[in-house]
Amino acid sequence: MNKIATLIMAGILMGMAPSVWAQEVNYDEARIPEYVLPDPMLMQSGKAVKSVKQWEKRRRPELMKLFETEMFGKMPGRPDYMHYELLSEDPAALNGKATRKEIAVYFDSARTLSMTLLMYVPNGADGPVPAFLGANFKGNAGTLGENARRWPFEYIVSKGYAVVTFAREDVDPDHHDGFKNGIHGLMDAGKERQADSWGTISAWSWGLSRALDYLETDDDIDGRRVAVIGHSRLGKTALWAGATDERFALVISNDSGCGGAALSRRRIGETLQAINRNFPHWFCDNYNKYSNNEEALFVDQQGLIALIAPRPVYVASATEDTWADPEGEFLSALYASPVYELYGKKGLAVSSMPKPEQPSLDGDVGYHIRTGKHDITLYDWQQYIKFADKYFK
Image (cartoon, rainbow, N blue to C red):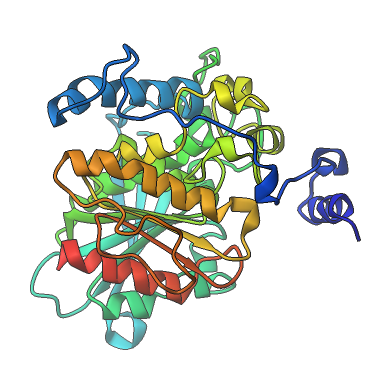
């Protein structure tokens, strides 16, 4: 079976029209076009950033506005009427090792839309504990069933961390519904959609911030030590949440690929044209003008990682996940490092792609590539916990 036929078959299995997937995909490094990577530390005026003050007062706001208006779309703030309800609590979960809680986060006073947080908090802690927070793909029940291997609750709890998750589709559906349902339907009712209106990635990121709002009220959780984490499209989500919400103390991108950690200008694996065509609801309408026009991008994805500085960030890849461009993910982490160094932090500790299962954990920018496919595994979690321990323990 040739490459195009394979893609068509994959698209059919995913419920997508064959015409969407019938396009050539490049996996050959020799065919990557020549490109010039914009410097995140070069202001729109052409002046170089020389100090933290210049970065925080001028360049970071410039970059944030560009990512907001040209890629992810503008998010609303926290709704005044948001409120919480404890739905269930089991103090003897995971064979007595954890307390399991379910919390409803209502986004409006009429309770027409909510997300349910599933929490596992280690028992016997001396005080509030650090936490990993991330959205999930298969619903909260799926984290205990078909998706349990991606959420090793007992292992994470054994290391002294709480785990908090919610179903992404509690916040917004992952299909192009014209932005009529989910949080878009609630928050944008009666509003005309603009070219920089928020897409679904922004909606999920917004949901992560609303989950953090709750965690700051929970006496079991230290809201100053919350790591936001995501895999694949939810890795893109975690990066944008970490960039827009500086309360997240650590940010983790697992196999986030195009629109996440991978450099778009490389045009290898998934491209902007493919992502905008196949998932038109993920980003704002303005992002379409960069399809097959990556050289016009205001900056590349290393700029997104740079927006997280000086807070620690971890980027991870997999050897067989060529669709997500592991090399491009690594390069983004590397090229974001000068902003960390501006703060006196240590960026990525290696300058060339490490071998599989040889993680780079010494800098404030972490990275690993593991053997295997597009997934989040126990090995990945083990590295994230080692990295988090440097800051949270």
